[in-house]
Image 1 (spheres, rainbow, N blue to C red):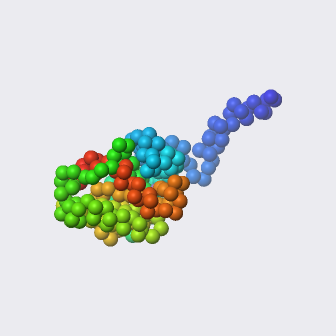
Image 2: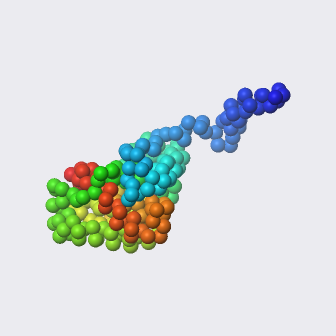
Image 3: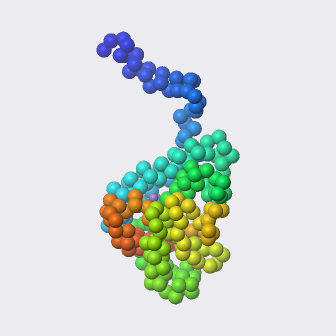
Length: 233
Ligand code: MN3
């Protein structure tokens, strides 16, 4: 190794960083991309939702897609008043004047953080308590509710989500496009999400390809009704 090679090896990384920081048009320490939002760890193993949702889908969905929303949200809000706001407040503030970067990535971060928590291993079954009573009152039975929710999830054209939301004590089933969220100011029908399903192709394509209906059917087996019940109360 000659002297030039050694210098490159030893100091290349820090020299590159120094020149970027000092002379780049966008002066920005690398660490400013790290906050304020971070990717929450998946609350169970990547393979824990098999066979309903396969391990590789969970790895890519959580580590790549969700991480991407977090990174792009941090970039979009860097140096703006939103950098000091909670994720809930950013999502609620989204209206037609909000930038697409904030709308898509704040929605993406909120929606996925929520989605991981309402699923779990050894789950499935049916709701109990107050949520079961509210579902029966509104939809007649849990089976009817499942049918209505499945229609909303199947019928969402392209990428988006189907949701069970509450507004006061009333329940509704709605769907939203892309990473929109029912709490956003621009939502046609507003409410607080109780449960929801990601029907973007990235959520199911590796295992189910074009068969979205099969993915939605399998989704019921991984729903954690304890957590969902708490979202309602
Ligand atoms: Mn997704």
